[in-house]
Image (cartoon, rainbow, N blue to C red; front, top):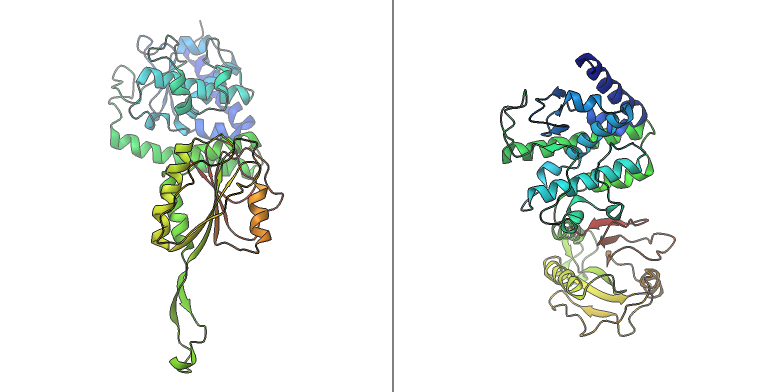
Length: 375
């Protein structure tokens, strides 16, 4: 059996290799002290987002590559904020979902998982929240580690109390900052793969609901400012600043290819309807799958309620090009073009000269414009 010093050497070597070979993950692991645990309390490894606790006998059974995986596993639980995202979900079911999410990320990164690590390939690319409903309410699967986020760990050295709600929120903020710093460090070193760039976007994206982000963006587009245009002759010759208020020209496009449910389209339109009155927006509404709905566009002034047609056409393929071609053909230059979609379709090759805001259902990326995740 390995001596404790041999175990510490293995863990130290695993951590060093992560820092050298995968600096993003290695930087995260460095925030977690390594603490030996009582075997009866921890059969493998555990974390409370403050440290990694390990069973020396379990670490002795791992290869060096597997030890790297285990350390990275604990660090990603923390970076992804799994300890703060459970909400109303059943704990065991949530823990299993989190393990699938983390393990698949690390396997795709080329790390070697220990025997028994949960990694259903059907869940690849999904978050823990998306995996959770696919897990049975009483799962028989066992997680690789113990998640000590909500219980007393008095049997584990240096862990004397549970993590209460206030401390959990502070830990979540701290880990988000650490994750951002690790991203910046890895980018400067040119050691952050494109695959991780996409994943990190999801890790650190703002947690505000899409409605709040949409409202904030559109409010900033409202054109209330001072104008120095010459006033009418009857007002005199003085050139003085005055408040110039005009309608915001807002184009809205709905993806009707069939990937978004009718009730989701209705909810989205109701949010735009609520916001447009506050910013005095004139709304031009289009429906488009691979071509524009021939009945559109529909025009609404800021005092008119937006009403969707009884049955929107669509259900075909997805092309975003027709909406932008229509704007160009009409020589419009909207203040904002807002597109509600799953972002899986043909984009124009180049961005237009006006702002475009994509409200995206799903994980697909957009080649240009501002993206808001529908969460």
